[in-house]
Image (cartoon, rainbow over all chains, first blue to last red):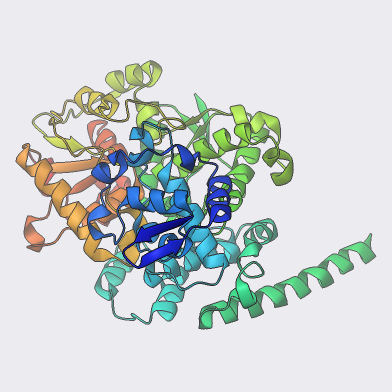
Length: 222
Length: 277
């Protein structure tokens, strides 16, 4: 099907619409564009597409429009839309599915900083099994190169004992790392879009090799 | 009363005073807490960024640990609470998930409670009434629920998602006069605080302005991220910023527990102005 958008006549992609519906587990086809999600959305004012327009783009399968919008990243996940939708659609789940597809296809996120935060968060969790804020901020700053933002806040937090310098590592961290593992292989071309991704991939491989050796040792001991 | 306890990452770092005051309050109210051994991060708002399964998987492991303990779990952080409750719903709906993520079926029925919910239980309310020594007479806090304790109602639903009242009930019990206002379920901007400070300040300034207009002299939360955003993203004159308490700190004050034990000195916006009313 062809539809008219701001960029002219665009071919729709029905397979993409199906993919979004499946991945978000939401009945996106039943949205009738009432706009209630947009009306209640706290961050809609900063978005390029209104939340209901993201829904429409997903519904029609306007892939580039949906995946290229800032809106999918600026969704704070507050679930106001989900609790008010008369069609019982959880739009924040749809946004999450769209960000996932965007990252996995190796596209450049419209809100690079926000994407960098989420990636850095998961990096930290995969290292220790728990989020280590101090490290997370370090990784994030390496990715975004905004080294001076919030330095005063960070210092105040350290002074008040609210930012631990050392991480807490859980015993079963391997299980967490395995679960979060998909972040590299699933991304196109290894998913390395910045220096941290490259470093993470190297660390992952090294830890994998270590795990194999360690397992071999245990097996031999038995 | 004995409960499993899942602190979550924030209560060991940015929300330490929530953890400290919570332990003091539970001790005073004779609630025994057993921390989940070797718990992991719930993934918060980043967990689902690459796949929903990862997000559910992180909480599924914690639920499995809780099921082994066989105790209801207290989850004070709103994001952790939300992730855990949502994971239970997702694991029940998608029959293939529990096997894929290696979760026992009894993990789906473990009761998960948040701090307001716990304090609002009749058994705890009675104890609180009996043990209270310093009622918060004259204090006018604004109860701020935020998002994730109430939404989506299909998963969390411990109070009305649009017009909740349990938080105010707890504050009134402590002798305070919680104000009536209209931003108590508005969003603080959550993790956008790390990279889009402009958006979070826009939201936070609006919430604080509305609390002030309704006559509040302080805000009270039950979420470490809301607390941090509300406290650190207010703009304008540093001296006119509104103090932001954790609910357990106010309970602790009413129980006569000394401020340092409750972590009151950890606040980046001095809370004393709101206490000496």
